[in-house]
Image (tube, rainbow, N blue to C red; front, side):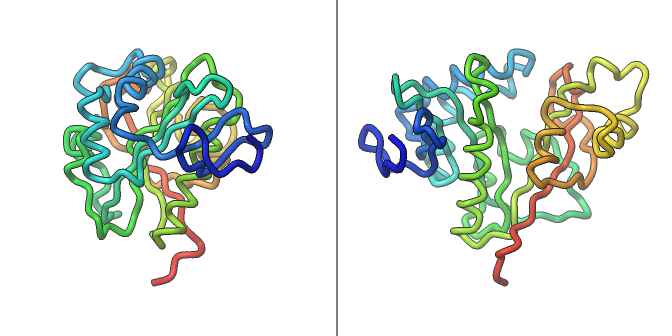
Length: 227
């Protein structure tokens, strides 16, 4: 598989060095597998905010280029995915709930002329974590940003470790400690290592006890952007 440009008739956008896992553009018929990965990844997320088959099909209708999946080249199984849409960003008023930003997770807020890629979701099935699949997806997302000449990537990161210490730390203290490297967060620390910066904190971003319902607005800027 190393260096292959297609897999099962699908264009390969990125691949792990050994070819075991490949990134392809997700399709509408992937919706059941995408929902299965979503549920495995986010067992604490409220039912109102989990992405289902209906949502994934709507993502395809609005912005197919922004929907990515990772396939196991040995089995053909879909084991990870990411979902993005385009938007313009008012950085003075960034603190919006997840469902508001994503049009109730249907991507009806997608702006085909938006200058930023908004990272609505990324998930790696628990059985495949630690194998570089999120890195593959982030690389493919950044490639898409460069290809479309967008300003960069913005997302609401879930500080998954905050819920466990919320009774002794404010969210501001927690995020600052993560930024300074004094504390590790399973999501935010990884994104900071990928070159994202923290812009601010989003209260009531979503319903998830593991992050105290908070999101952290993170930004990656495309250094190759041409106005």
